[in-house]
Image 1 (cartoon, chains in turn brown, cyan):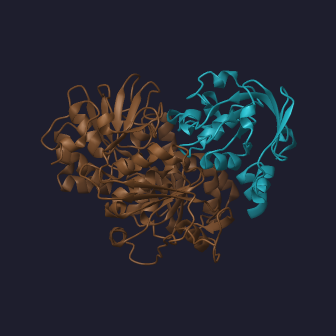
Image 2 (cartoon, chains in turn yellow, cyan; image 1 turned 180 degrees about the vertical axis):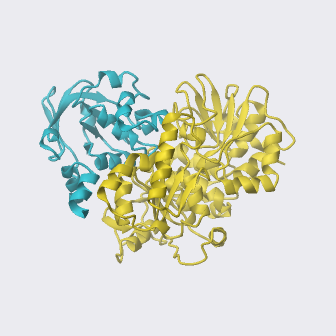
Image 3 (cartoon, chains in turn orange, red; image 1 turned 135 degrees about the vertical axis):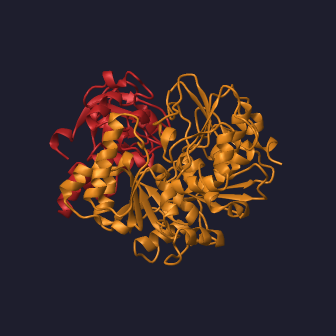
Length: 421
Length: 166
């Protein structure tokens, strides 16, 4: 018999079993749950009220208003006001209104602990994997069940291992590492499965950048993502106020994987996902783009402090190319405050960057900066299918924040390594 | 599930692999109330779908139907537009769970792609049976675990929770 994966161990713990096998269906206790305005009270409030049950644990539940915030019209205002009224009525202790994007807030505010099972009404709930927690997406109706019972049913999934070796070169980030794997696995490559990211260069990344990989597991159609924890994780958790009360799980050396992929990053170039699919990936030097109209640094995927710092390093003392616009939306207020204090935001704004609210914005197809027909954009976000960021006639390239910044300077998709010495 | 929806019959609408929820229900409609979503169902992949779909019609997907965002507006829009069921070779898990939770029958069927655009199809979600009336073929869907079938029979998660929790 082969050993267990980290995912099996987490689900065994959460379901109160000695061990679980792939394919088992378990009822598992949820350690933390998040809902946002787009998949929250506006869709499920009435049904939840009809059940008349209390929220199972308000200390483990976060509600955010990040998708429609600030609103750009009546329908969004209505969603937000329903969300705020529900938060007040339920006397929530963790409701965050335009403070940041849910996945980043969950990590920053200590809701995510290694070994935990986290649910959320958003596909990028997989983000928790960087902290050793299994994050699984559900919808707003299923969220009613979690809120009422603090439990969710899950089929124990197989795991695909994505292992990195070598040393991360200058100009290469977590985004490049995950896009490289997406090129091979494709957008359905991890259907119903968990992606386990591992290897020395992965663990050499700052914890925030490890999140870029677990976050984008959603783009492989993965059920979740997982990785090991180390001292850097413990330090991140301590900063989030989580000092104890968690147990990390690693896969056994003889654990069975559904598939294994290995990448030596030493000679890896920055990677770019070209229109109109996330797995349409090429090394930056092979991408010959038309002139760009927009560069965007934002979303739960690509607007953490280190993303902004990488962009600022490229932009410092330079200007955004004539005829294009650089938009920047930090992923949380805490990130925005730190980027203000260390000069990062100043460098970006001086280069011509336009600062947007700390919410999902154009990555959710809402808010200012949406693409018009025929426009071409490069973004540090996560999806580039037609219509994701506005018009279905627009084109979106996806890359690291550094590559987005370099492209903003050049006016076309450009290699950040030219700007970093 | 109520008796009127036990047998679903209509025309087939065939879409391919990896149909993203962003095509099923574009983001710009995310803040619309349920009843207004129907007018935009499948708009991102077939702008004429909302005006041509008939009550009881069935959507046929290939692999990974409903990938991408976990937005529940995707199955809600389809359901409100009158679609009786979605049959696909495989589903993305978020779309699959969301559909079952809101009471839209979804059937995993290895031979889904033997159904052609416009074929007349009759679906029994409880028995997991898909009859292609045009071709005279019967397909069997993958059986679902008992606890899911209990929810399907109740018509979705909320009616099921009302039966079991309150």
